[in-house]
Length: 126
Image (tube, rainbow, N blue to C red; front, side, top):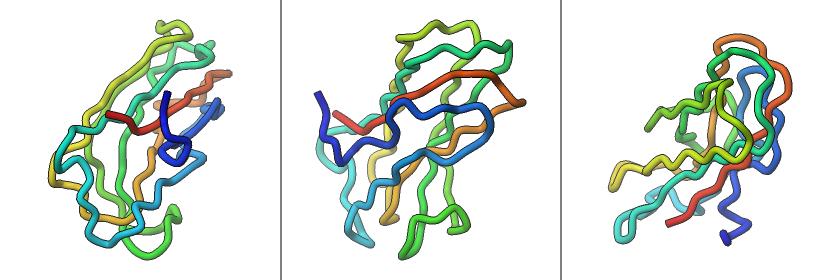
């Protein structure tokens, strides 16, 4: 169970590089995220890819007053799904303690080439 406001995407089709459907607004220009209890991004493969391509999920911070693609972005962590993974695979990526200083947090999916099918759920949780 997770907070719906911490959902980054739900059954998002990923066939090319893209930003997550949702961006989390931390509602502060100086958030204290993960200062006490560690937080993680959970990425859940809901539908497997039908290609032999590796999909990289990069966690990026958006800085500024809006969460648009053209704002300054800082990559925090990287994790990879591969085409050999079946549906149900979960990646757990820790958010760095004390490093989140921006208002907006979102995922960027980077594909090494175009893939077929494949959907992902992602959210923040302890």
